[in-house]
Length: 469
Image (cartoon, rainbow, N blue to C red; front, side, top):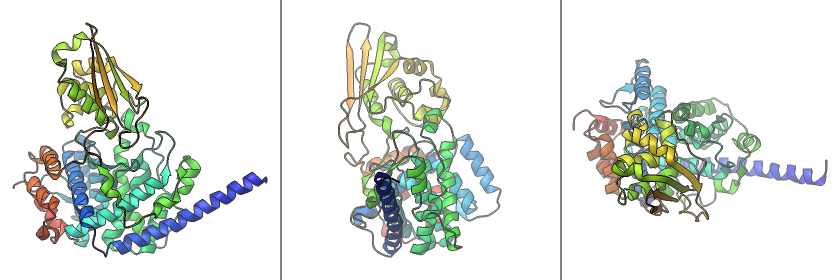
């Protein structure tokens, strides 16, 4: 063996040792933080994430696939945890977690983390809430567990960076959020949390990002199945099972080719809260497309596309992800990850509500025609974060005019955070028809109402999903 190989092997060994120690330290911090007050600003942001993600789960109940999952979950005959549907039907814990986790990303309205590809709230909440009901946790305890579990999940996501757009974050990181949420809800010890993280680190699915672009609905199942797997992993750890000492490192780095930064597991623990760096969505599509949506909606102030679309010669979209295109999306998932569709439907219909990604909108003649005319090009040079997801839309007309609309950063991120009023307006649009009690409870959650924080989560969710106000 030559000196280079020896040095490389030594470097890998040190990296693995650092990750092993980091997972232990992160678990120790998480379990100790659960007994400490959460900073007020962090808790306020956590409440926004909580309300936003629960509303996203609620919004999908009428989708045929989610409705079928609800029916299947109810066949267990158990009444352990709520399914997010009107009337608050109850199922077994694992069935509820799987269905709610799958529903949470269905309409692509959940929040996300800007520090790394990761949707921490979506990954944590289905398992956390299912266990919180059976353990009789208060709403305040749930919010504290969410903030801490989000931190665990986000730090793991920050530690491994995959090459290009290869591995989907739902496949890579949802298990870890679910483990953290289940562990804190059930009062697991730090060693058990560390073992559970190592267990799911050896079970990560090889989920390709392309699944979302092509509309493979298994992508939506990754978050649901992860919720149940995370809950089981805590039990397995308590039974004495374990994984690789360095958790996902053999898979993420050895198989998937990720670069690794072990220091991200523990650096500034307790002083920097990842959840404060999250974003919220105003549009029901992949966050990478939001600047393109904003550009298209602004373009409607320059041209009436419905009456003038025959005058359009060319449509060019300059974006940070020109390869993420699909001119013929097969279903709502593919449409939500198609730059051509989100631009076309925004130009034609003027909105990106869930209906904009249903078959009627996908197949609408004007939307289909516009999709075919859109050319995706690289936005070059790409600005630095947080302007690293920009879009510029150019429409060329028969008379030679070129109309331009540009958005460097869509609202909702840390640089343009949404207010509580904007969050409430969003969730009201998703819930007012089917969950008339949702808006009032959501407002109290966002205000961190002391009386509500001390109530058991199982009582709060019943009020939230009740058929009558």
